[in-house]
Length: 121
Image 1 (cartoon, rainbow, N blue to C red):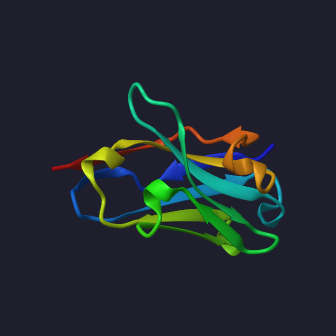
Image 2: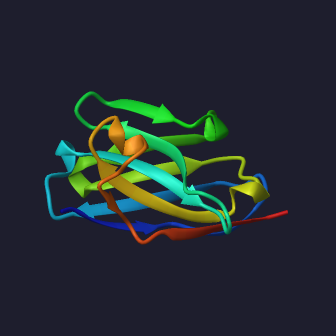
């Protein structure tokens, strides 16, 4: 099973940007689908974005459409989530996930430990 480690979270002001990274190891990165989720205190874990390495297809939740871009670098075994125009309601722990396309968007098979994103007003 692949190991996933997120990084890039932190404290930003509303309207700012962050790029989250997820480094994968333990299997061939190009053979798996990857995604990003988030979970705010007291709320359900929410799907944000996913990428299918085989076909290069991406999928986004309506809540982040137009503000987030998912991408990857096979040479570095890393997936990124670029987030722009951040809002206080974006404050959450952001998780990287791996699985099978397109089920990774609903039922990933593996999770990272998460990285905290806090957006101040």
